[in-house]
Image (cartoon, rainbow, N blue to C red; front, side, top):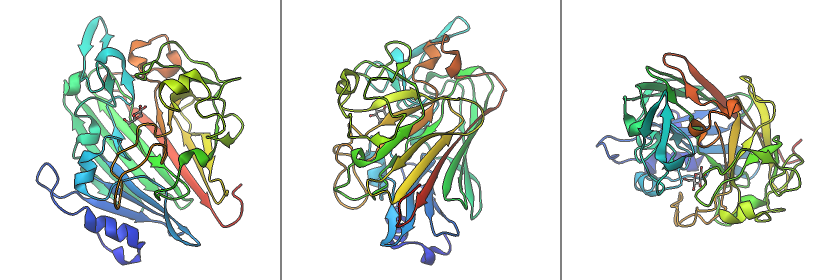
Length: 365
Ligand code: BGC
């Protein structure tokens, strides 16, 4: 990469530490984008991963993404830090679904279930670097017919753009030559206070524009349809600290915190504001908008022991993920017409999610 000298030291170190050979015998390729305000975003072709995101704060560059900084740690971590998830984000019950009268058995990687696309999900692949500039980078992947048990050859691209308005916009495109359920997401974990050992994501204040969420069993598989958030700890329609109602509900106790899909209000093909998060001191705010009908709020309940950049490991709740997606197990719920994840043969898949950051020394709006 060129002009590395103008990047924060932590970003330069990341480029150095990630050197070495990946599992396919080739080096990983990293690209850092930097905008006029001095915000940076770094991406890698392995897993089409969002590796780092720094904000130029008064005290210096603040890293707001959880992540690793060596290839060994990238392969070791099971937390899906910053990776692109596919073909199907979240769980598919019993790793099976039926389509047009035919039963499909797909890859099992969480007990009997399929999680995040299976054993060799898109996060484990070397993506092709299709195109890049100082503003954006595009990665492409061909997933062959039968990949992890899914039907059809699926070609996808993921485009990351660092906007002048301090957003990271992620656009997904795809086309499959057979009908197939597809739900792509990015699994970034955020901590807007900075990625340091003592930070806990439950100190953030969070708003989610959703009247309903999806209850699950202890393995994360939906047990019913969506239910109202009202009078439960799942109600984030008015901004509150994540900690406020943490573990209050039986549903949370099952999985050690929030690890649930919200059915977002006003779903449409437009990108809508669905969530906004503040640091406790209100110096950084992140707004999320998406064209997807749902998003999984995951408070890092199983992060303990996950390798982190620098020395040591993450602790539970070091960061939270807000993974925009179709509702988990949608392929087995055709009655969820508001979450129709079936990509029809030769039709275009297109979704967008924008993570936009606001920071200053004063209170964020
Ligand atoms: C899941 C969690 C899981 C994490 C890492 C999240 O999307 O909902 O249960 O531990 O991904 O795999």
